[in-house]
Image 1: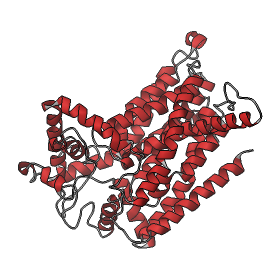
Image 2: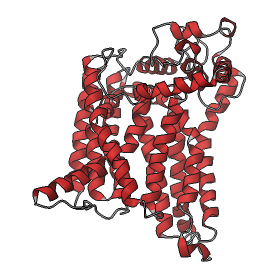
Image 3: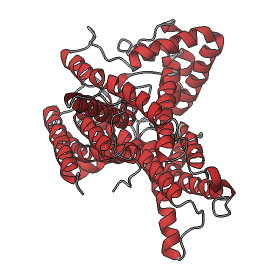
Image 4: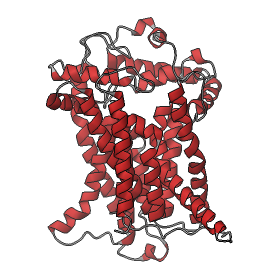
Length: 467
């Protein structure tokens, strides 16, 4: 491949940067900005290793009593840490280095695949390079929290979905290939999609809210177009897409079901996966804010806000009770809730230095999102303008998928609880658009230096298969 050396160089740089951060964070667990949760994951993993299961040795955040079961934290990430500690000893640095290498490879590679599918090779390479050096991605790759692996699972899911749509549009017949191996090959992408979606859910269950939208998009993106609609081979296309979505759902469900059973045994009630949505919605919309959201309240205040009559409930029962309280806050004063949600835009999209943040946090914020945001916005506008006439095909439907993910994922957090680290999946999904913008600007500058200014900068034909 002509561009393989360029991608290899980008991946190498990505790995080096993330390993450097992992080494800087070291072999100790410290309460550092944005990654406080690594203390909880480390403690929980050590509890699992010594046979105490998913419990804490003392009263713990958010309101879990010592020795009682918890489902607040990602089971998958806890098991990852427990597995690393079992093999290498209780050394957080080992887990950091493994995660840094995995992220160093997969961040640029998955971004390259998505960018290449939609906008061509140059934009894919540019997007990979941007993802490789993005400050937030580099920092969180060495942190023992779910952010990095969750973002990678999201990118994997979106890449698989785009690949399915691309293959079905290039081969519109809904009839599976002949033979046992042909049928297995046709089923494999859907199985992988279910695996990716289930993995993402085990890291952060929020993705399950977007799963139905993803499946609707898959049916829409693979529908027949124009003259194809009346051909016999494409008429049942949507049915096979629905069948594939059901297969993916079954695989994701199979990954989640054991934890649902475990939760019922632990709490005596139905808990699909994690006990955190109720806490988030209650605290994120409490009347204490008025109409001005504060991302982090002073230490100890969150527990004080829990009504005294609810504090005796177990973690799962309390989570569900707090969710009902949060809904009551909204129904009691919808206008306040609307203004409070609007105020979260500042916390979610903050890119400027803040006096409340450390110098390092301000540097990472302005040097990453602050620099990339103009490229992301320009890329979105450029993609919409350039491909608005192509209402069919992977590029246009992919633009709809990625921009829809950005809008809906952001809206969920604006309606509940907004932090900068919750925005990282959005940043990752916007990288292909930033890559498109960078290539376009480079083409325009190059054309200007040669003495002419093109109406539209050249971009390689998209939709090439991503290898």
